[in-house]
Image 1: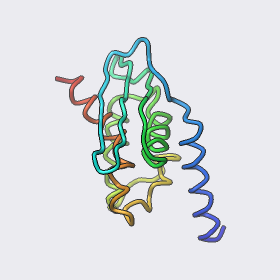
Image 2 (image 1 turned 90 degrees about the vertical axis):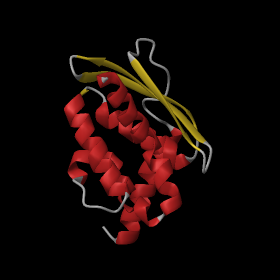
Image 3 (image 1 turned 30 degrees about the vertical axis):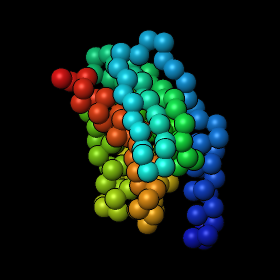
Image 4 (image 1 turned 45 degrees about the vertical axis):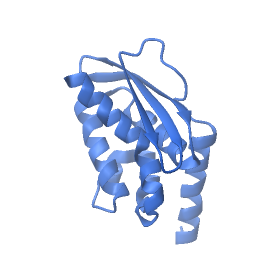
Length: 144
């Protein structure tokens, strides 16, 4: 596949995730929730999770924002659903490294790896990170 074709595929994955987000909604049985706001573009999200036995057994997000923040939230939720807390913490670390242009294990990130070139657009990094930052804070608060 050419570089242009790969770029088009990445754009389509992002658009699909933003337009038809799989985990958008509210969990009625959430054990934890964390709100996040990106003042630079107005994105507002809340990530909710049901955590049991050190595993995220259910996850959802709600809110509004740009295509990047919504797609990132959707792909994040898809990746972390039914995963152990330790696995999720590793994925968060890998995602944050990736969007900052640092070395990251893209295989561990699944479809969220489509954001690998977002570091070239510094104003969009916060958009892509918003849901991941909220989940990271949710897990930190859950442990305390």
